[in-house]
Image (cartoon, rainbow, N blue to C red; front, side):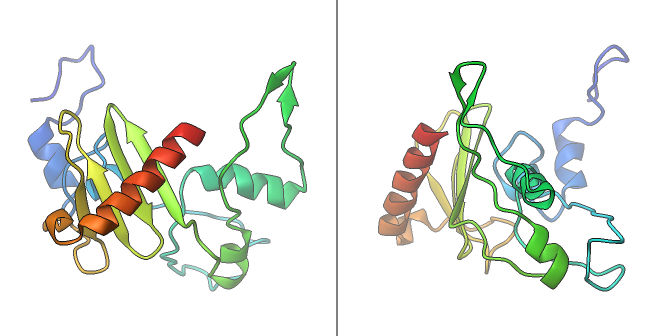
Length: 172
């Protein structure tokens, strides 16, 4: 049930899951229902694609910083107020705005509320739900709604992706 008027809760878990159909779960979860979010961009003088076009390029919120830096030709500091700044990891979306395409991320990592995930550009995704110490594996090319955990069929892929996740988590 939603919380009282003094909270920000608007949907309970059951309706939150329905609201994200056909994807599983809701925000704060690493399944597609939690992390797949459309983005609408309006920039008449900068976007060269046909008006009203839909582009399914995989982007991430980290790409917004990279895009802003690219478009403004600004530099990203290595040090600020004597503190080392972690390098940004995003990729500019400017080529998507112009051509509808770009070379995507090799991997995109996620962590929120003890949930972990990593997606590869070839459509594979691992998830470690909170409270579980076992990674799940999904092929988003054939199972976008993540209904078939194929981790037991591809243990080497899971191991490789877990290693990539750990490298990303340590770096970021």
